[in-house]
Amino acid sequence: MPRTFVKYRSLWIMVLPGLIYLLINNYLPMFGTIIAFKDFNYTDGLWGSGWAGFKNFQFLFTTQDAYIITRNTLLYNAVFIVFNLAVALTVALLLNEIRKRFLQNVYQSVLLLPYLISFSIVGYLVYSFLSMEYGFINSGVLKKLGLPPISWYMEAKYWPFILVLVNAWKYIGYSSVIYLAAIAGINHEYYEAARIDGANRWKQMTRITLPLIRPVVIVMTLLLVGRIFYADFGLFYQVTMNTGILLPTTNVIDTYVYRALIQTGDIGMSSAAGLFQSVVGFLLVFSVNLLIRKVDRENALF
Amino acid sequence: MNARSNAAVPLQRASRNRIRENSSAAQLLIHVFFVLACAACLVPLLLVAIVSLSDERSILANGYSFFPEAFSLDAYRYLLGDAQRLINAYGISILVTVVGTLTSLLISSMLAYPLSRKDFPQRNLLAFFVFFTILFNGGLVPWYLVYTNLFHMKDTLLALLVPNLLMNGFYILIMRTFFSTSIPDSLIESAQIDGAGEWRTFFRIVLPLSLPVLATIGLFTTLGYWNDWFNSLVFIYDTRLISLQYLMTKTLLSIQFLQSNTQNSNIGKLLSEMPTETVRMAMAIIGIGPIVLAYPFFQKYLVKGLTVGAVKG
Image (cartoon, rainbow over the protein chains, first blue to last red):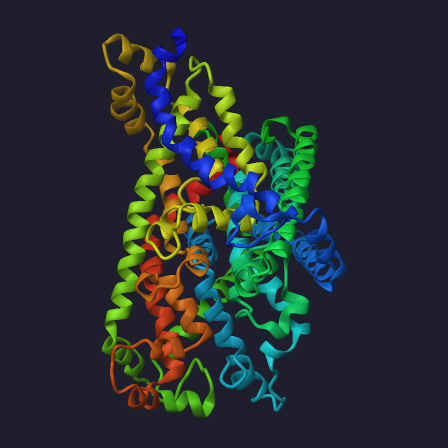
């Protein structure tokens, strides 16, 4: 046995549980991706099942599903990224303008609260507003205005708006805290120099704050772009209450893979969609990291 | 967070005061904006809380309302009548959260620490091993089959503890960065010269000095376990193993779930008496309780933790 191994054997024992876990939870499933090329059935298991070649992918891509889930996943994530960035940045800049530290903390804490709440609960909150018979919007607003009630959980067309709002509600506090921290990290001498030169608050914001937090904003955004092929399962499953009729506008790759696996038991199609997601996701993260390295070497993942 | 040098204080105070005078209208507008934004965050919670305290008849007549005609504790009384299920779900959630978080912190830090040791020969290889899990994954299906067919975790407590939640590549990298930047090499060397072995050095010197990062990662792991319902959704069919979040998911999707599994024999009677709508919302309030009650205490650490995570050290 090499001497270095003996010298560091305690450290090797230390890393062992973690390595085994990653092996089971992360690496074994990677090898399992060959299921996508198999005609899988439970009785024969992974090795016994026959090969299917690219048939699973063929089936997947000849259905309407592949188009819908890809489009939905990409479009939702794109809108989330742009909308949340705009609002969170505004919130952070405004929070920074608040002179009373106490109130700044209060606002920040309240805005962060939704981030802690699980999607099981968010599902309830949305239901309390949108329930057909008793929901606040139908019975508390539309009825009082003399308008007919809307069957929110029956009509797919409303959901792009609802999901964008719910996503913003949950995550804007989180991003704005990070942007605010970046702003707080800016050296104060810049502002003092600017004030002496007669710059007003607006000038300070556009000429100092924004340019100096640009790297953080770019890195955060690129990280999200790298994950654009993955959807927030909780948002699309719980908030829509897993309603089949809404699928045209609420089905995303993640919920599709889940339904194909658990509800319809279509393992071949499900793993083909999953592999498609992982490969495209990998390419995106990889290329996004190249971009980050160009923008800001320090913040690159690798 | 606002690191300001002491020397600059007089100048700053003067100019800050001037700004306040100059833009009091703007300040007012900003405050109005934030009061509205905070209301948007709180109002949905408030609605659910009020409905849960409303009289069922006023809900049936007027729908969910912030000002119901009559208040009533019937929903909570009903839930307490069949408290067994709730207590069981709470127990599962607490057990899984505590055991999961402690195990996670232990094995994550034990993996992260050697990666931070500059003299450990395999650190780069291992770092890549950790790191690659962030980049690529096998997808849901093979992951599911590994846990159900290979390890037979379906319908066991382990299914709530182990899959995905136990360890996260990002957290390990954050910990490694903390260890390598905040714990001086000389400290570790001198401990070892004094005769401390690797384990002693790790548990007695490195971990106690790493409380900030342990608290941060521990907080996120706790939240991850407490809020998790996905593992239950995928792996759990046994009603005895239902966690709080999953109980809520099932109750939202079908109020019948609460009714159908009661041990109570006179189900028909219960069904007719159950204040369905208010019970649903009371369920949500009971589930949300612990997080909201604990929030003021860990709010400060959460903000610090987010910042650590974002800056990536």
